[in-house]
Image 1 (cartoon, rainbow, N blue to C red):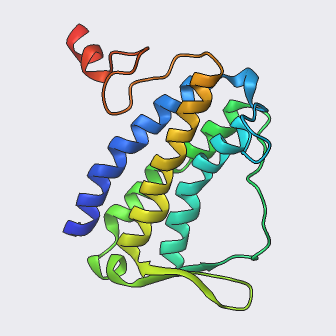
Image 2: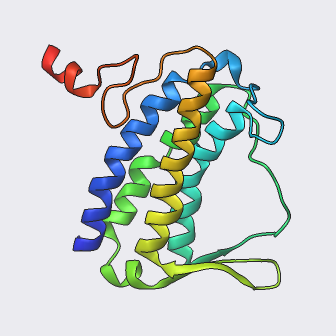
Length: 175
């Protein structure tokens, strides 16, 4: 394994596990909740988070991706089971693929192009993964934690204790 993939995966797996905790805290009965008319629903936001990993890894594997350019919102799942199937299904295989990529792949340009071939975003594969997968997921996970709070549910620990959860360190100390 190249050093680049190794360093990325250390950070990503930590964030992925945290994201799963936040997704598990999202109330399944509130998938249609929308804090503002211009906001995604809770279900759309959860789906968007779940669908980012397969999309981003596929884009790096292909050396880029072409998008329609038409605005479209994320799908609206009918259950949280759909969300977990999307994010967890194939996760181990995608991580194994990244683990096996040579540094050259992670240093090669990956672009998001519009329908006429115009470049919306282009970066080396590792920057693409950090931006589109890691930071994008963290951003939307933060939004989802706010939805959870607005609905009156318990927000899990993310980078330390929350008002509702002492965090994973407390769980480890108890065992």
